[in-house]
Length: 227
Image (cartoon, rainbow, N blue to C red; front, top):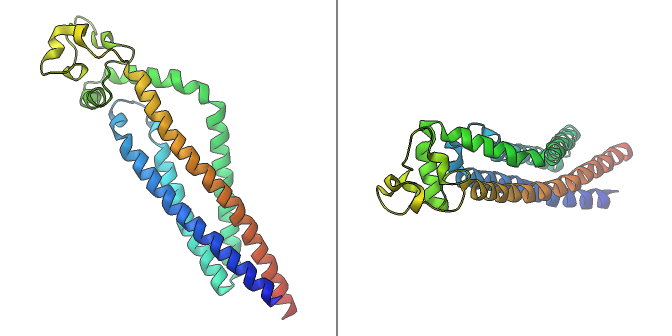
């Protein structure tokens, strides 16, 4: 029994360390994606597309804290800490699963909603500096095309739609031909792929952590009964 306890504790510690590293990785990926898509904050009137990295950062922080609790529980053979570890990991896993299912069911709504958000953002003068950054960075103009900027009696477009200062006064003739909607959508999808891959990796690690945590609890319970 003593040998099985040591082996189970050793395996749990390995899993817990991996879980801890995964938590730090989630925080890092979440911060990187948040910084990478910061330019979109000013052009989207709804923040749901840019809040996902914040959720990832929060989940990663919880994972780090829970991993430390699990480590303490294993080293000190504290069943209450191990029970807390298993329950917290299971809760986070169920929340991630629910969010994943909701995102999958509504995946087809994202494209239409994103276009509406971008068009609405163009009407807000405060978002124009962010639009300049995006149009310069992605070499695009407007949501569908450059004519999106010709609101009312306007005949000029932002200089970020073309290649030299005050070029916007010449109108849509020399504007970038690519639509920003297509490129912004691609950027956001790429960010979601990174977050999705991190989420899958965490999910696998969580399942192993739950199994190893329960196994250690069972071994400790049997060990205490025989002592």
